[in-house]
Amino acid sequence: MSKIPKNPKDIYEQIINDYKKAFGENLVSIILYGSSARGEYVYKKSDINFLIILNDQGIEQLRNALPLIKRWQKRKVSTPLILTEHYIHSSLDSFPIEFLTMKQYCEVIFGEDILSSIEINSKDLRLQCERELRGKLLHLRESYLNTYGNKRFIKQLLQVSLATFVSIFSALLHLKEKEAPSSKREIFKLTAEEFDLDYTVFEKLIKLKENQIKLNKEQLNQLIEQYIEQIMKLTIIVDKL
Picture 1 (cartoon, rainbow, N blue to C red):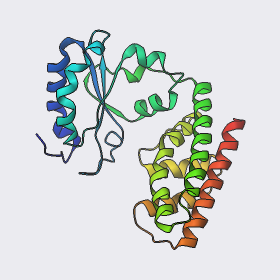
Picture 2 (picture 1 turned 90 degrees about the vertical axis):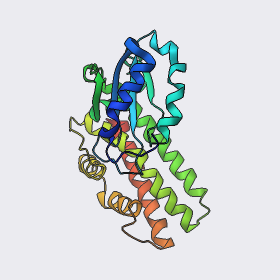
Picture 3 (picture 1 turned 60 degrees about the vertical axis):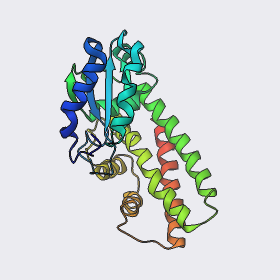
């Protein structure tokens, strides 16, 4: 049971059977989302994410899932996001980015296709995009100061932080009525084109994350300064949308 799947599809049948046993008729849907649904699953590195949708009775029986969580975590399956359909529809104004991202990149492996019917309000989406960008900008500046100028710490910050912008950039493309690509690299490239950003900055960040380039301390400092500048520019643009 502890074997990590080479392909998420290898565990679909077991996941379905486990959650059907746990919740029976109260199980509405099981939906794959995240990097695995985008086709970017990397064996032994990527986590596998599932959205479990229960009815109102099932959501009160969460203890039924307790025996499954640790067992599946050993196989790189994250703790599932367990929601009801009512919670999803009543939270679209609060979490438009999160639900839009799930809708864009998902695969229904059991039950009803709940996500296909949700509609995201553009005003709610723009507001959350701006709020997230401002928060990420503040965090990026603070985290840079907390590196103390250490080369290794700066590199770690640059490698980790970029992933936090993927869903925001996908949402911004939606506001521009553009279909977000499945590749992270293409998401950054298209967003740069649509919002007049310098893609070369993001390309360097991607290459650094994938260990395709090596930068000295001065180059890392220059890169993070350019990175902050691009996010600040994007924040101003989104504020004016």
